[in-house]
Length: 100
Image (cartoon, rainbow, N blue to C red; front, top):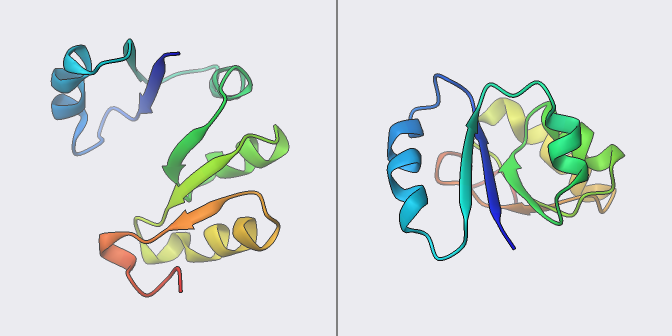
């Protein structure tokens, strides 16, 4: 088992995630700006991520997903995927009321 973390170059916690990855108990790769996201997801057993456009790729690939709403504008995606049984939406600190 291994962990693959995919982040954008401007992700606010990128440096911290990169610094912590070597200390994790499982092999962890931190990838930045990937061009093969669908393949990475197809090779995965579980996705933990934000309710963004990539969520639809996971749904298409039937990838079990734990989803976080990090902004109010992600609410409709998260709730639609949860309604379809394609994701389990977890409460987020910035959108506490959104997942109820």
